[in-house]
Length: 310
Image 1 (tube, rainbow, N blue to C red):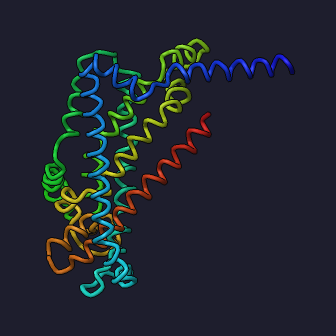
Image 2 (tube, one colour):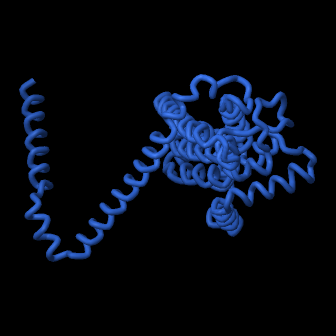
Image 3 (cartoon, one colour):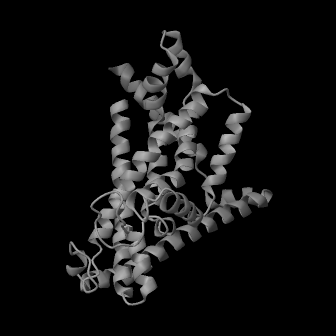
């Protein structure tokens, strides 16, 4: 007991010494910056960038809440009616369509993206020309505007394949749009897993497939889920690609071949008509809450999966 207490005291003293060494007053920092003016400039630029980023975020959220909350209260509860009419301008069908569109797009894109990333990292020869081409292509596709994806989906799925303005046309188009994001994030997550994990598994006699699915993938789950969360945010906020593929019909579809509008398309349609500006502001508040809720739920699920894996 005495040795344990002495060890605790020694550790506390070491921590206090380390704090004293790392602690510097403003006068000491200013004297250091006199000899390193570039460091001071870079620090000021970083602080300015942080303030601008946080300020823009606060302004956007504040504007949405100030404009949308009074409208949401004024038109409640008719704005949440089950069926859309020109009188209630209900957003409930759009909310349901947003959830359906998100689930369908993820069902298509996530397995394909994860398996493609597994091939690039675990099976393809590292540094090969094929891997480099695929990475450059994925990065290029990530930067293409969403309206280009919408035109592509319109030409291929709506016209060529004859699917028309439908839920499935929009879901497949969005899946293609988020596929590069999922591939790149999953690939980076797999590359962050130390090679010692793989070598240890191979040393115990496990094959490559078993090593990938029992050792590598569980270790890369946080990074993979981060990419999926980013993809969800892009799906929920997308409108340009869906106008050309899923259409703007304001009702819950009976099948995958029926037209449907998501919440972002619903908000765009109301603003473009110019007759339901207040309802569009209310829809913006609900869209903001929906995005925050989906991200929070995804983060909670990610933490649960990581804790179970550990």
